[in-house]
Length: 195
Length: 124
Image 1 (cartoon, rainbow over the protein chains, first blue to last red):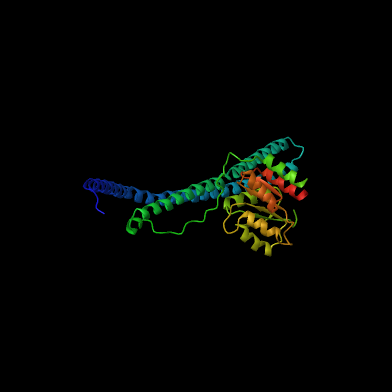
Image 2: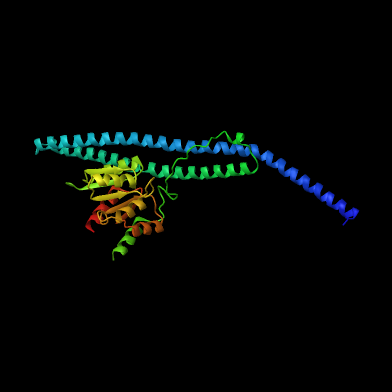
């Protein structure tokens, strides 16, 4: 079967046009490769930065806990000492002053404990950062797959050698201020289950 | 509180420290710590524990697997368990209840809530 001259011309034009399109596509992919490799290399830097924030926040929180524990121990000693003095001078005018000092020391101690309770933020923000880091690791994997698909050689991906990923355990909804279910609702769920 | 011993299971050292301090303030002097369910089970073989406070999200063995493992044994099937976690989605709470958790607190908690829940669980 021979094709007519005009049909041959049309097919040749179509092939030439397709070749041009494919060449353009390949060129675009090559142009994309460099920024994609750069982005792929930057993701682990962002992940490491998040992990560093978590570690340093935890270290700082533990230093604060050390101080709080020392403060509360000293305040307890002060309260005990004042109570002994108070017993010895019971009935004297200075005894009232001792009671006031005991009350102040108690207030200091309770406020130090309030700071300690507030430090629970560290566990919650660490989980939020683990969640963000985990999302970044997903992006990193997807970028790597795209780069391999468009033919990025191993050398251009070698900037980030495969490292063992940190095991991340987190609640994706961890939040310091917002709860999906209030404690009262939780209590009623448990109350109902007992009935 | 005599020989009454509590195990605080949480992978966060900060949280364990806060929980231990809160318990001591509430009069519970004997508290042991574990970093996850697996660590807790190992420690509970050595130390007799009267009460469990456990987180949910932990490596190796999480809180749900831990509670399920406890409830599967004759020794620990009735041991009081209080879950203290950030997880506040209702479906999670129901799942924990079904697994055998006796009560549930969402972090951050107040010392008053922790003490009240321990008392409530112990009162049955």
